[in-house]
Image (cartoon, rainbow, N blue to C red; front, side, top):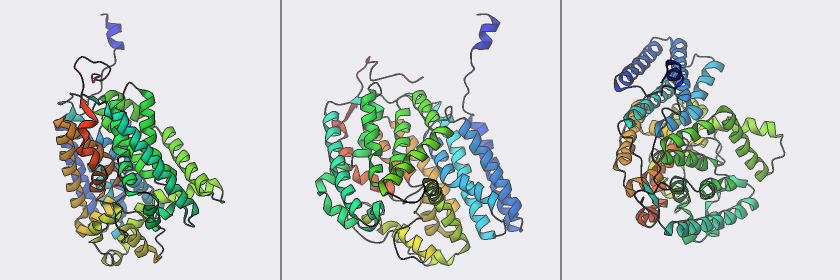
Length: 453
């Protein structure tokens, strides 16, 4: 091979090694300490600008490497950036920096974003040591189960849409008039449709050479958009790409790189907004409605910052709701939910038409008070260990648990901390009968066991 030909061969970019990651971790920890120290001596504006610049630099670096570093924590870090990190930086750029409690809270939010960045790099380096792909294929019964789940989901959505269409609250009746929804669909139909997310995610990974089946699985994942539940479908798609990466990492990374481009993100935002705009029949101009949706996306950070400047709000909330709302979340109760109580605390409006959702950050804050950054960091580190353990097991059961847990963990960024238990419970029949859906791939069958590059 000539020198000129050798120069044309691209050199693959590898994730940073353990020493580099350790240095990054120390740098982020030191920066966090400097930020809090500056805030403690009254230099709040300097503290938050310094940490914001560091976070934005780390986020953009990670975003640029989203193909090379692809993994669950990269997906989580970018999702966190869209929901928390970028709104934090935007807040810093557009607001006076003179409220010390809010600055302390922003420092915590940005520090958690930095930790996710480090965990993403750790995952990328760790997977270089364990690059053996999952090798499973669908059982013959999978098509039958998929058809049954899809039909149950279609029946449920049709019935729910009828209730919502006749309600004065529109799709918000999902959270206001749960009794009417439950009575509209038989329990056994709701149990069947509860496997829609798990079945769709597994199907996208198993039918890698059957694009029509993958499209059907994708439709099953996002079908709840019809009744106004957008976030579950959004995080379900991200989880499906992550599960696909366990079988074909390069293919999944390429797909994620394409769909996470600024143009595709803007297109997805417009498409999802148009669905709700047309479904609800709003009479305001579309441009104004898009601003409302953007404000809703930033409402988590705005609500949390309001709490930071109004500590009495947290004192008025019952922390036990973090756990007792579980029965309402799984659809067997109609008690109070923390998001509604949070909205009432912030606005004084008893109407549960909430614009402020719960989140992992909010519920950890409610339970651990000023130590919430440490508690949230511990949660993420434990989560990292759990997911890597399940990935290394490479069993049918570990695959099923990953399919159930991945969308739930991502969903906690904008929903309740107990969502992983909710997702597992709703998918329990399929987790117990996973052997009917999945089997180890036949050796030497290139159609079902594509090698990982």
